[in-house]
Amino acid sequence: MSIVSRPADRPAGPEQPAAEEIAAYVVAAAVWAPSVHNTQPWWFSADGQELSLHADAGRQLRVADPRGREMMISCGAALFTARLALRSLGYAPRTSVLPDSDEPLLVARVSWQRRAAAAEYEQQLYGQVRQRRTHRGGFDPVPIPLGLVAMLQEGAERDGAMLRIVRSAGNRAVLAAAVETAEQALELDGMYARELASWATPPGSTRRDGVPHSAYPARPEFTLPYFPGRDFAKGNRWGVTGSSPSAAPRSAGLVCILTTAGDGLIDWVNAGQALQRALLTSATCGVTAALHTQPLERARLREFLRTELCDGAYPQLVLRLGTATQTAVSVRRAPASVLFASGGERLTISDE
Ligand SMILES: Cc1cc2nc3c(=O)[nH]c(=O)nc-3n(C[C@H](O)[C@H](O)[C@H](O)COP(=O)(O)O)c2cc1C
Image (cartoon, rainbow, N blue to C red; front, top):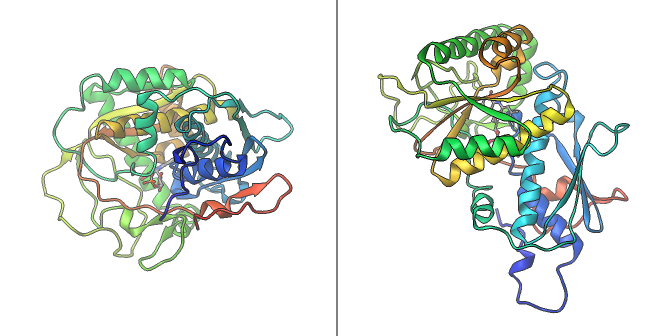
């Protein structure tokens, strides 16, 4: 896919890139944020030097995510990416999260006027926006780079969240068991299974949302302790076959829970911003993440994890971090299909 040309890379001239071009550039990056089942539950409206990010309730998982928690986390990840795209152009974005209490689906307004050169690390994070992929499987038996954990924890705090490392063997086993229990319960739930199947796209599909068969292994890779992934293929023999997973379990990696002190809309958006910062920061160090939200979709299991592993804070995401050969491929809707002028008409983008 070609990327909208970078307005700031043009030969220096007296005129700044047009606001419309900047909005297009930002949205073309933001759509590469992670989202639950790759639902991409967002749309954008542009008005001069201001972009609004809206949650698209039509793409909410009504069964797995009835409160819209994962939808708002996904939008938070898109918000972080939009802000980062503006930084990559040398703008200092001004962000107002949930600016209108009467409009809970208006996630944020981001405007840009003031210029401030991007820091080296911001450019590095931006460089990972389209490269980063969700991993589904085990990791190489090597520790993650020194210093990364502290960087991730500091980053999460900046976004109003907390990254808790689940270090003890006992707690890792407890969390893995919660993931497995949830996975089994969800697989037995017909409505849930139908919803999941509707976001798992078959080989040959031209859909640009959902989880394609190229994004997960055909056979589960066992880890110690075992963190089962979602069964996207359910009964179909889909998935990447390639290298056959070895019989010996692989490393589960560094196991973490991203938490917030509260559990409202703002906390979910914060968690999404923190998630995308953590994923991109990890990617700059060659570290990839596997996500396991299954136990957080079962109220009792989530409450159990909150009290037993999170000191009463609200678990928003379960992550495993490590190094592995990246095989997953993902898809996104065309930016033009999610960007509108404030009057409602579509903005023209060359990136279809
Ligand atoms: C809130 C949220 C929850 C997610 N939960 C899971 C999960 O339980 N299992 C999984 O394999 N991926 C999970 N993901 C990752 C998405 O499936 C992934 O971001 C999406 O398919 C796009 O692929 P990409 O991240 O490789 O670009 C989650 C992502 C978000 C934002």
